[in-house]
Amino acid sequence: MSGKNLLKDNLGWFALGTNVVVAIIVPILIITNTSDKVPLLLSLILAFLSFIVLSCIELLIYNQKQHKERVWWKINEKSDLLLHNIRMDIHEINKEVHDKDDLFYFYIHKKIKELNDLATGAVTHHEIKIDEAMLDITKKMYDSAFKGTDDSVFMPVFLCEEEDKKFFFGSELPKEYFKWALSKVQNGSIKKIKRLFVYNNSSQLELESDSNMLRLIKFHIKHDNYECKKITSTTYNRLKNDSDLSELTKSFGIYGKKYLYTERVADINQIVGYYSKEETKITKYTNFFNQCWETAEDFSNITCLPNEIVDINYVFTNIER
Image (cartoon, rainbow, N blue to C red; front, side, top):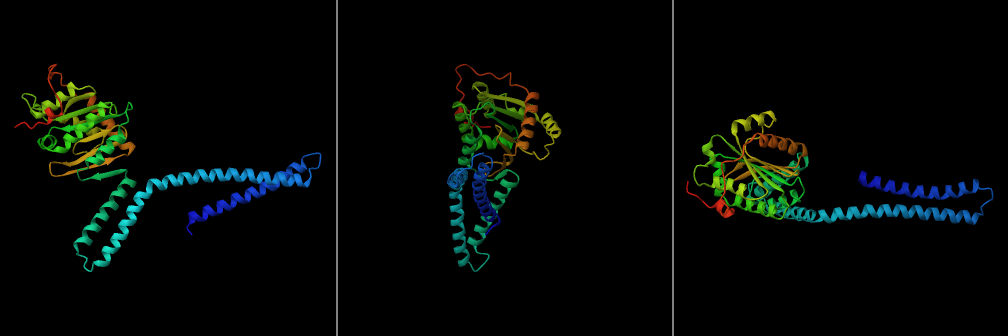
């Protein structure tokens, strides 16, 4: 028997013993503190009633605890069933493998190791490494982060490097993310989107001629609850160093007060990044973003015509460069 179960059993016996003792002591106190002697039968009745009342209270507390455990089990039973099935299947695979270089053995155990590392990171560091396109999970994350409250603000950073622009406008995933974010703005789940453009020189913004960059900026100007600003990489890096964020090498995004995404690699062939829910880390990056936002400049020279259609298709239509 485990120590936890032994403790539960001991507590149960302790509670029962307490009920019995109280049921005996209460009548004795009543008898000794009353001028008229209480009949023995009445004392026994009082003892029995005390025992019943205390037992009912104990059962009520026990039932509440059991209900919480049943709720916990209902939440976790699906994952427990999956883990059980995995263990059984792996056992069968191992029985059939006589060579450790077997492809099935190698690949399955590689995935188990990755899952173990993933779970360990989630528990110890409150972050998950994302190295694949997980559109469905990202949508779930949007639903979780944005509930229509005042702090439901999405704050993405856009680095205006050539490879970043190629990924953003040349891959289907950013368009899908952009579309999903727009739907959350339209239904009120996201209160505001504040996109910060970081550039080395003005030519990176591509404002002199029709470009996807210009169209993206116009989208933020045209649509309600969208804002965008620009900041030079020199200022951005200075504020980053002042904020002690030397680990930040690529772009990042803040999802309300719930999640932080820091990018490692983003191109058409590969996506690698980390989602974190560590409150102190989110606060640190949020403060850094706000400092940049206060220092950044508006796109005051960019305007949209009243009848100009600036939608998602307009932004992501491929323009020959």
